[in-house]
Length: 450
Ligand SMILES: Cc1cc2nc3c(=O)[nH]c(=O)nc-3n(C[C@H](O)[C@H](O)[C@H](O)COP(=O)(O)O)c2cc1C
Ligand code: SF4
Image 1 (tube, helix red, strand yellow):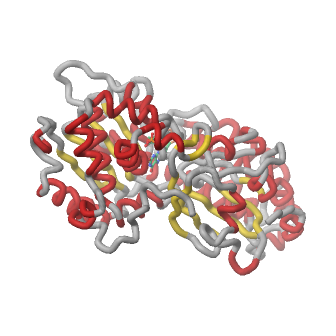
Image 2 (image 1 turned 135 degrees about the horizontal axis):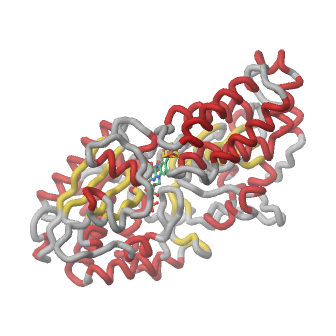
Image 3 (image 1 turned 90 degrees about the vertical axis):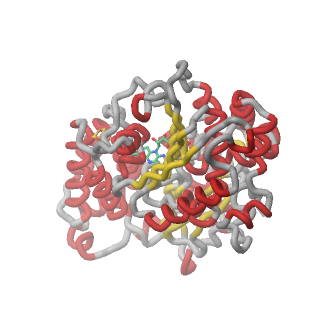
């Protein structure tokens, strides 16, 4: 059994409500932090824990907190990113829906550390019913003296506000999120200045993912050093993975970042193997933006070692042979899935979600969409495959925000690892228009060890 820190009590009946959550040991970290620690000591524990941001980039949370500017007399804010619109990622939803108080508890402790008296949860618009759950949890915490003025007699005041987005993926990018929070169109800002200096309403702001902030609870309860003992290397603590696609047991799992990818896919404790007795073809291990990996590179690194479900191992080999843990959206594709169709679906999504501010992304995502449409429907040429490669190369690294990279990387990886499947769509144009699956011969050539 893997170690659980966030989902340990997920099955306790009534855990969504304050009384049960409290009876199960909830809000201890608030008592500990506010009664016996200074804000800097809380930040230090988060640094010691090695906690990395769970929103995708994996930036060390304690380091981010220590960058927060603290000019005299200027309010500071904590903004929790609950936008979660990355295809394949649905772990924050699970946490907020079933254990909302762990997020509220984490926000109170984090707000204390950062000196934020007004903290925000910016939540994806489609999660409307979770807004009600969070509002109720906030009210319960307030009724029990954990929010509001002079919390537990500590002199610290804190209010939490929930702000709904309007259904745009780009509003998950932290500066677009801040624009939207301020009531403007969600266009990413040019950086610097970074939010730590000039964030919400021009004030110093920390933006962290839901899971990152919830993880502060076990860190303060048990100490940063204890948290750092779980996992391996710079992948400390536990990670929520939302697993979906062609697997027997889709769902949200908490892993301790030491298990192999093979174990995660085939063990009954986790995904339970590929559905319908099919073979594994490929996987996107960290949400739709990260490079896809064919089965052989997914299970083993280029050096032939077992690939582990953590930041370092999944990125081993760079983008030539590796990928990223990203947001933990684990999408599994079986041998029948068509890589061209799959890449086209993603390209349409990124085209639709581009905010249009910078030309490489605005124009490039249109080109990716159009070229992939041609290839998928049997009207593409070999030159289109090269053009596709050129277009993604010209987007990568040339944009205001990382949505451009997020659109380019899936295309690059698909061509890099499955070029023969793209070529098949050109040489078998007729069949490509009618057949809805990929190259059987390719799946046959993949060596699956489990
Ligand atoms: C297009 C785009 C969408 C993003 N969506 C999310 C999201 O839904 N949730 C999230 O936590 N981070 C998202 N991010 C990352 C945020 O910009 C930011 O890095 C993150 O919220 C920081 O939190 P962390 O350090 O705790 O990971 C997105 C980034 C980009 C470029
Ligand atoms: S990369 Fe795309 S989404 Fe990001 S600012 Fe530029 S146009 Fe907008």
